[in-house]
Image 1 (cartoon, one colour):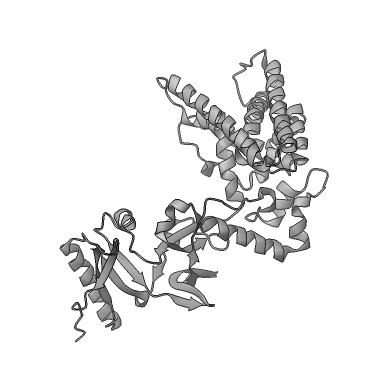
Image 2 (cartoon, helix red, strand yellow; image 1 turned 90 degrees about the vertical axis):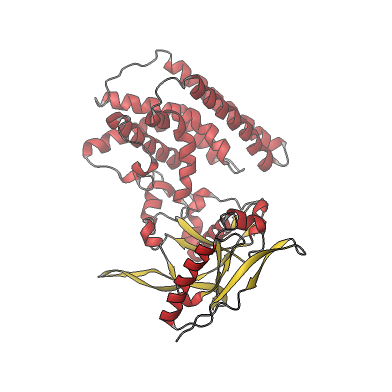
Length: 429
């Protein structure tokens, strides 16, 4: 798995390098330009495939790469984000050098400005990599709470690296900033680690609700300084769970996407400062099985990683753990947000593609909108505008039960309460 991980890193970096080599700074470079999920399949011609195979082979044969792959493969304590970033920094420098040599060999690059001291430099950073890893290993053996303290050590290292990067940019701020080149040379390792999350879980989108609306800070922020309005929804029960019907894409047929009302279950947000860790190699749920075997779980000799055992021995248990972990992650916020008392409706893109913003515009049924609360400072003209919209909808659907409320500050309770505007009734004749 670690061997395939670093191979994936190399291929993504080579792709980004090629874009800068061809287009320079003409167009902004982003991860949307890099086939992150299936970069291993990008073999357009036999010549391209031959060049990439030669590049990956030379990369694998480097002592620095052999050391880190073998060492991480024997690691018992989890490798966290900052530690992985620390190891990627020297690997990144080496990978760039090998890509440069590969391009020169195939006449894809004309600049032959190699430093004669390159080999000494790589020996130096290889020694630094080994020292970092050995120090981490020593901590795991000598300290009882190693899973907590090792990440703290690398967090401090990351803090120092970020300061050096800031100083570098600051001292060169008078020079023209080349964003694409900077991305490939400096930002790529940390950006790559952030991008890894896209291989684990599907993209997800959320609509946020609250169990009540008495908190003044919520009205101040989400309620546009108390000038907006709060919508009250009726909650239905689908399979015993609180839900709201939303009209969206529900399936596909020969004539294209089908749109219908779908019950969406509310997920209650849990406020805590601890988050469930995710085992990356055992949570690659977004990729097809063929890609998992080809690019991640099997090596060149055909040996399969033990990380894939659960998928093949008990797929149902793996799926249950996978989705439990997904919902755990998307329903957690820090304690500081607990005043929101948030409930969420989720759209996830595992089955349907919601990447286009228009595809995730979901409409609720007007019958599920029970009432509206005007904010303390909602202008009268806005109240009238809202009232006329609601009147038109009530007449169209023959509703007589719609309710309006006015928010006010309760001196006694110290909260934002609301009272029904019982005189506001629509004449349906």
